[in-house]
Image 1 (tube, rainbow, N blue to C red):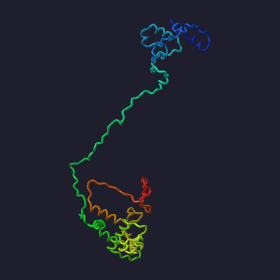
Image 2 (cartoon, rainbow, N blue to C red):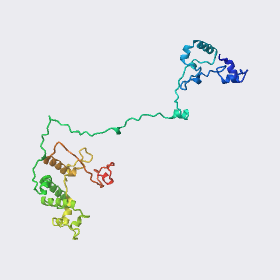
Image 3 (cartoon, rainbow, N blue to C red):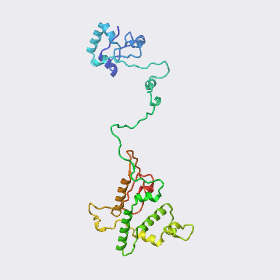
Image 4 (cartoon, rainbow, N blue to C red):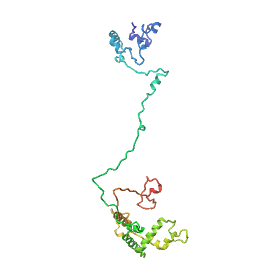
Length: 313
């Protein structure tokens, strides 16, 4: 039978007071004779008990042992009921020379989930939804037929009409008269002036005077034969689109229009564009930026534009 010590004897041994019970070498070697039971030495390393080393199955089979333990528990002041609770800890088993800490720290192998790379993607064509109950019956295309053999002036005349040119002539003469200058321009002269502006647009020179220069490297005969340079500069100085300042709204008014001076030509082109061409149901709208760094209240700054020069327009 295993030798038991009282709590006072254990406390005396810890504090160094009182006699120490004698333990022979045979008892120390064979702990079953007067020492702790080494029954756990023969158990699996995967199961460890905290106090008595007895499993619940052994407790149910040996009732007398439970009674003796119960008596010892009543006499032991340091006894806690939770000490008899069995705790099972699983320790990984390995035949290698690795320590237990290395086995615990080793990360378990996780099955790699399937990725989208193993999937075969295919592109499905999508067709626009059709509405059989509704049909586009509006007429489309040019409203005024123009023969393909017509001259370019025939197409330009559809946009720049005679009424628009007459309005420009009257407003230009009015502005020149208010300035004390006799301009006295006509419809034919205004057509020639606009034609010269188109030529200088696709045949550009460093200076406007070079079109009338005597130097053959810069001289443009088709320009110099139509109009003299002084007359051209005079028309450039007094050409106007809307000079009726009496009808111009005040700057502090809600009806104030920054584009009042060019509003007639804007209204004209908006009307002509709708009259000449009827679009179909499918439209593609695009816009273009015109770089401008002059002084104007209509100028806008576009910080998201990639090119620095086109951020102002």
